[in-house]
Image (cartoon, rainbow, N blue to C red; front, side, top):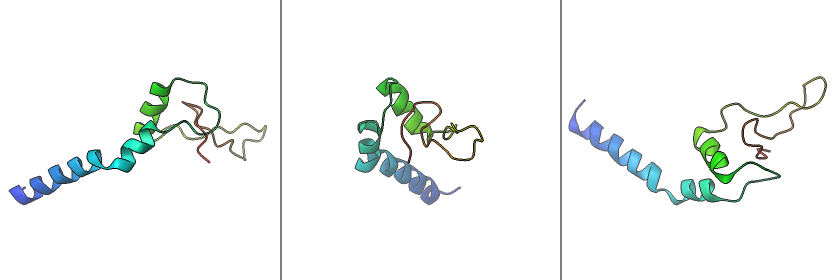
Length: 75
């Protein structure tokens, strides 16, 4: 890997972490009813809600659209 590729990766990483919308998303109020702590929601947002949504009906075909981990409304 030459120095240009390394520089591009470093600049891309810096841009990702300095982008205002990323911080705004992490710090915004939880959507819907979420009774879990803010820190758990922030960590779940950073990971991208890895476990997906809940399926609450008996057949499990229609999603509830809340995160399994933090309870935030993803719909």
